[in-house]
Image 1 (tube, rainbow, N blue to C red):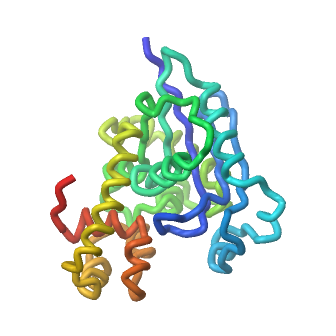
Image 2: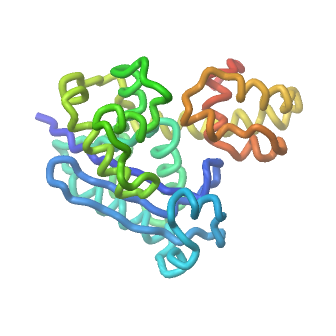
Length: 264
């Protein structure tokens, strides 16, 4: 009988663009309560004042931290401690399919040591999709903080703190609404998530290179699209076409809501 290990995770990053770097990674295994929490010094320093304001992570703090090349290896070694031939591991995050896991796998691909975890057996569960299914009329949005406030009547204590967000998501998942309504369609294969992310990035760049895309119209379409608050708050309202190509979150908005047809 196969056992599923569920690991809740959260990333803090230098931005939402395709080459954003991970500066903090927290994870928690739901049953044992074992946790992983490390900061990572990005290659490109300093980080912006905006990121410091949002996350509370300062350049002084990061200068004392190990690089991602070490933190990433340590994380996958930690995940591997839960793996055996009778176990599947599910990575869980709010917006896991569109942001956290694609970025984690993209950055992990740069590690010099092969991962001890078989990606083919790795699952991804997106609680943002679950929340939209279970709370379709939630206002103002389905961001993690909004879901938490709806369920518990108060704001989570530590927002945009990796371990604080992990703990808040654990409480959300332990709430009766979520435990009584398991939504398996929100579970994906990690390899499929990674492949889709790579193809999406490649095709947006290809479309831009073909010069057949009206970038000004694209920006307008993104801002008018019927997307979640989490997506729309980060969609660029102005800026160069290069910024668009770099923004992995806008890739998702573009392909899912602006309806440009691309053959993968």
